[in-house]
Image 1 (cartoon, rainbow, N blue to C red):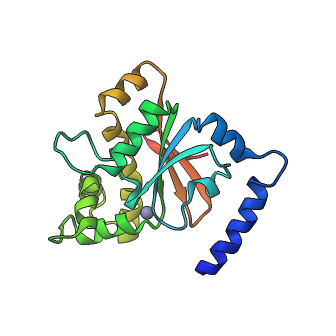
Image 2 (tube, protein in one colour):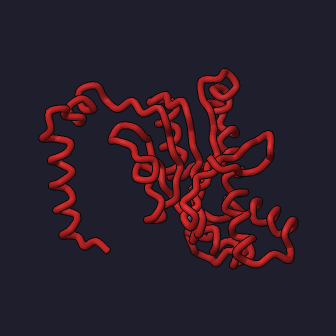
Length: 210
Ligand SMILES: [Zn+2]
């Protein structure tokens, strides 16, 4: 495990690689601005860093991370909608061409949702947030009532990705772009146990290995 001091050493290496080399990537990214073509909604989980998993460079990915990689639906009440605001920025201002909702195995947020059985503790921000995936949990419970807990959690991790993909198209400015072909939505799943990447295949109605 890294200490805070390790991070400073890491920054020195990063600086040498990106600021002191001949092809200064950051000079280009500062002068021209960022133009990522891919937006990723990933989990806060320390094992699921999209830039590391996909071996990307600075400037490649516009990344939003939250507990259990969830996308809220269009809501008309006022509040501080961090995930929605970031998606709006990525789509409307940066003009990303792809949105990937990246789920993963052994997700603590989904595990808590399945274990709690959809019951929210009063005053818990996490419980309130995880209610976004309640429809996924309800579906999985109906389909796999007698399955072991791990299997239910695994199914719920994947089903919640579909809930988020559905929520994305509740925003008119996303639905419009998907319909005219300028934006594509993807549901991907990183199996951190097997080291596999899967994508949702709408025709097969299942997640298949990439
Ligand atoms: Zn997670």
